[in-house]
Image: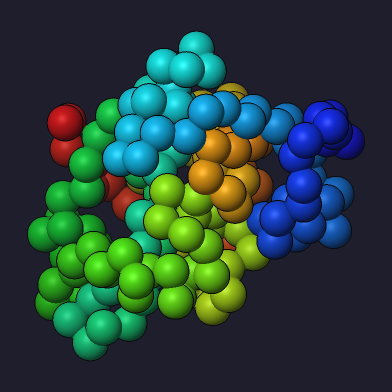
Length: 164
C-alpha cells in the first residue's frame, strides 16, 4: 500500500487509487510556478522522461480530452488529432482545463477528474516500469506503474511526442 507521509492529505486522485487498491509512492516537492515537469524532475532527482505531464486539451468541437506526455516532450497536436480521428486538437485555456478536471493547472492528475474524459497516453510511457505523475495537487507527484493508466482510465496509446 502507499507510504503515508505526515503532511500529505488525500486528493481525489489518491482516493481513487486507494479505492482500487493500486500501489503508489508519494513524492511532495516545492512547487514552482511555470516550473513544470522539468522542475519537479530536477528537484526530486527523477529523469524528466519518466515524469508524466497531464495535459487537458480539446478537439474542434471543444470536447475535452487528456493527454499524458513525457515531461521533456511536447504534443504534436496534428499527429494526435489524426490518430484520434479529430479535425484538430488544442490545449484548453487554464480556466477551462480547471473546470473540466476539477484540479488547478500545475496540479492536474488524470485520476479522479471532475468530468470523465478520454485519456490518451504516449505509447513509450507504457514501456517504463514506473512513472511519476501528478497526484492531484501542485507540488505533489505519485510514483505508479504506467499500466494503472490503462487499467483505471482506459488510456489509449498514441504516438504524438515531439522533443522539446
